[in-house]
Amino acid sequence: MKNIISEKVEQMQPSGIRAFFDLVLGMKDVISLGVGEPDFVTPWAIREAGIYSLEQGFTSYTSNKGLYKLRLGLSRYLKAKHNLDYSPDEEILITVGVSEGLDLALRTIINPGDKIIVPQPSYVSYGPVTELAGGLPVYIDTTKDDFKLTPEKLEKAVDKRTKGIILNYPTNPTGISYRRKELEALSRVILKHRLVCICDEVYGDLTYDFEHIPFAGIGGLKKNTIYLNGFSKSFAMTGWRVGFACGPQDIIAGMTKIHQYTIMCVPITSQMAAAEALVSAKKPVEEMKREYRRRRAFVVEELNQMGLSCHNPQGAFYVFPSIKKTGLRSLEFSQKLLEEEKVAVVPGTAFGGCGEGYIRISYASGMESLKEALERIKRFLGKD
Amino acid sequence: MQEILEVLEKDCRATPEEIARMLKKKPQEVRNAIKKYEKEGVILKYKAVINKDLIRDEDTGLRALIEVNIVPQKDAGFDKIAERVYSFPEVTSCYLISGTYDLLVIVEGKNIHTVSSFVAEKLSCLENVRGTTTHFLLKKYKEDGVILKHKEENKRIAISY
Image (cartoon, rainbow over all chains, first blue to last red; front, side, top):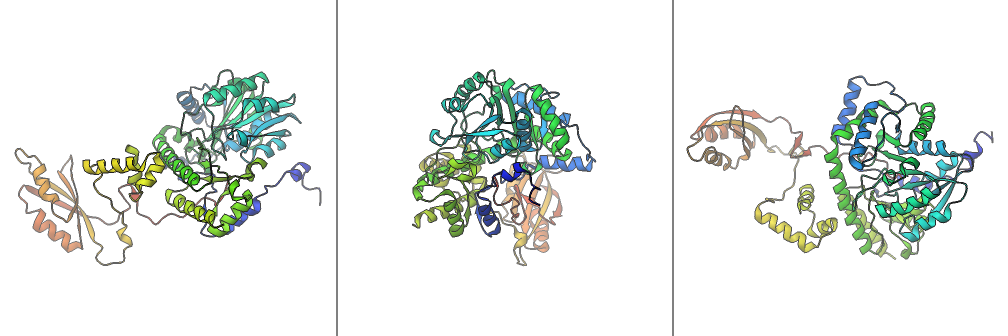
C-alpha cells in the first residue's frame, strides 16, 4: 500500500504548525486573533440576493467563465474604480475564490522546472501550489526591507528559468502595501525580464493610507499580468467562494480550459450574490473599512506601547509584530500565549522560514475582544 | 471629526483615550470634540440598549403606538400641542408625520390599564386633539438599528490563514 500517494504529494511539506492549530481548535473560551477572515457577516442585501436566487429556482450550472451578468458587472466596476479595461467576454473568469485563480494561473503558465518568485513572509499556498503545478518557488526574504520586495532583490533572484512572480498586496500576513512609485520600480525589472505577474490583490479594497493601485494598471504591465481578486475580504463573503481572474485573452482562455475540466463553474447562488454585491454594497463596505482602520490604529499603538514593535500595516487586517525581544521562538510564543492567556495568534513561521521572530495578529475581531486580548498579551509579556 | 460620533454611536463606553488611538488623535482633542458635541446638543445622552423582553419581571412594561389627529394652532402650528403631548413622561417618542394623522406617539406603561387610562384620561382630553388610534405593540424585533436577539454565536473557525 506504500505507493498509493503520489511522490509529489508525499513530498509536500505539511504545515509545521498544524499541531498548534489543532490545539487552538480543541480549546474553549479562547480569544482568537488568528482568524484570516472578516468578523462581519456578509451585508444583508447580498445575502438576500442569494436567497432570492434560490427562491427563483436558479440552481443550474452557469457558463464556464461565469454568469455574464457578473462578468459585465466586474468589467464596469474595475473600469470605474481603477480605470482597468477588461472585456467581460474574453478577459474575465469567475473562480472559486482567489485560491482557484492562483492555481489556474500557475498551471497555465508553468512548464516543468520553471521558477516562480515568491516574496516572503507570504500567504501559505503560494509555494505548494507552485510545486503542484510543476514549478519551483524561489523565495525572497523581505524582512530586512520592511517586508517589501525591492527591485534590487528581485533583479538578483531572476535567472533564465524564472517564469513569473506572485505579488500579493496588501500582503497577508504583514499588511504592507506598495505605492505607485514602488510598483513602477518593480515593473521595470519585470518588463525587462518579461516575467508573468500573478497578482493576488484580494485585500486591495482594504487599503487605508493611500489608494490601492492594481499592478495591471501600471504602464505596460497589463499584458504580463494576471490580476486575481475576489469578494471574500472586502465584501465579507469568504464562505461564498467567489473570486475572479482578469488577464490577457490567451491566458484567460488557458485558465478557462483547466477550470472547465476541474471546477466547471462557480456555484450559481454565490455568483448571483456577488453580482448584487457590486451594485448595492458600497455603504456597508465603506463602513467595514473605516472600522478596520480604527482597529488597526488601536492595535498597532497598543502593541508598540507594550514593546512588541510593529510597522504600520497599510492594508488587509493583519499586524505582524516582532517578538524577538522576548527571546522566544514564534511557535513557542504562540503556544505559551495560548496556554497561559488563552489568546490565539499565528506564528510567523507559518508564512515562511523568515517569519521566525514574528507573529501574525488579525484585527478582524470586535473592539471588545481586541481590547481584552491586548490586555492579556500585555499581562503575558509582564510575566517573565 | 464625525468619526468620533460613529465610534460613540456603536459603543458609548469607548473612552477618549481609546478613541484617540483608533483615530490617531490626541486624547485632549477627542475630549474637546466630545465636549463640543455635548454642548451643541449633537450628543444628547449616553445610554444602554436594553432588551426588556429578557427581564423576568412582571412590570417590564407595555408599549403602544398611538396615532393622534390634532388641530394645528394659529402661529404655533403643531409644535405647541406636540409639546403638550411629549411632555408627559409616559411618552417615549413623538413624531410629526405626513399622511392621515399628525402625531405618532409612542407610549410606555406598566400594563394595558395604565396605557389605556393615559390615552383616555390624558391624551384624548387635550384641547386640539381630535382623535386617537392606539396600537399595542406585541413584539420587538429591532430597535434603533439593534436586532433584539441574544448575542450570536461565533460562526468562524478559530484559526485560519
